[in-house]
Image (cartoon, rainbow, N blue to C red):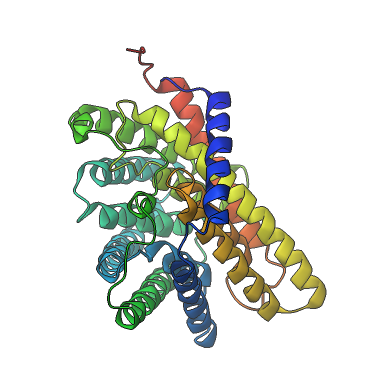
Length: 379
């Protein structure tokens, strides 16, 4: 695996400098930034009005589903909903039938099989289906993980809340995108690199012939599945709230469907760094927002500050193709900490545990890549 951490940090610094220049030169679409913020705000408002649990899922969905054009947003939203519904249904059925058999060994085995299959097919299928496959695996792992870590909870209720929140977030974004498309019928692409930002990958694109070797994708999927299979062991260490997010984060980073690289492990190491830096920065800002709003005892102020932070993440995401993924993860880290499971949890420890789960998951995957990924010689 050809990878240099120090060199990558230099590249990141250069990317951020270029992003800042683009921002200074008005190289972003404020309309797209406003659309993303409105989508997140609408999703949070709906979950608040109807007193949904886990409203963070709705905010996540609202942010990541948004794309420059309505057809792109509609397709992505429907795929996310389809994958979530199918994965949630399969997870709930498995738990209801075999909950007594969900011990550490069985959950590790289930995680390995499902995550390996999901990672493989999310990487080799066409863009028409891979997003749904990814969210099938993510939702299945989340449901089974909740049943294992907190068996006293009503898993059917969790499944329904997951489905409802994802639908609210996705449909909110689809609605905002449709309104925007109607208001401005002849929209131009916001910036030349906008298509790259939708790939959620910081790696530049080259010839698709580099993706022809499915054996590499299979090995990489098995390695990712092995990393996810280790996460249930965190429960034995008291990390019930951490392990689920760790597993989900590993599978999310493993999604490299169009990464034009002959070295997927090295590409994933880059993605890990971008995700870690973005999530850390966003979560740190979110923790600061929480501290301020706990002092003033105002959840409304927290949501206002969260939307401002979401705009910052979107601006960074759209500022350049190379910093796109980091900007998306900045927003994700912020929403993870600032959007609580309910409005009554103003001082929210769950968000901090979710953030820690992301970092632990990334560390596990990075360790697996460093230990087991094949090292390729330079040409």
